[in-house]
Image 1 (spheres, rainbow, N blue to C red):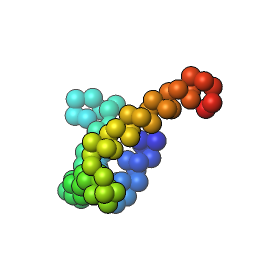
Image 2: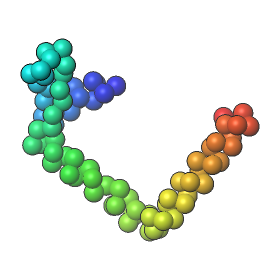
Image 3: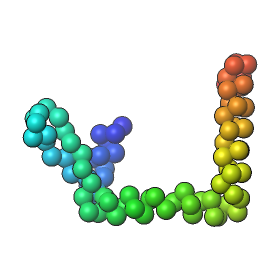
Image 4: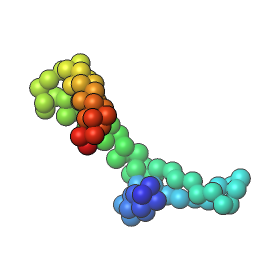
Length: 80
């Protein structure tokens, strides 16, 4: 999965895959300038989602905690 993502990102020049100088068997993934720009853009997405929802981060964290508990209870009960 990660390799496929790396190949897809390489197609848009977001990463490049040089061989490790220390060990030719290792493949190192590094971001290109375009990849760093994409990462910077992606880092703003969570804040934009919170703003769009119109609820506070504290509320979303509480909701997440509650859903984790509900999921765990459902798994324990064999409902999932």
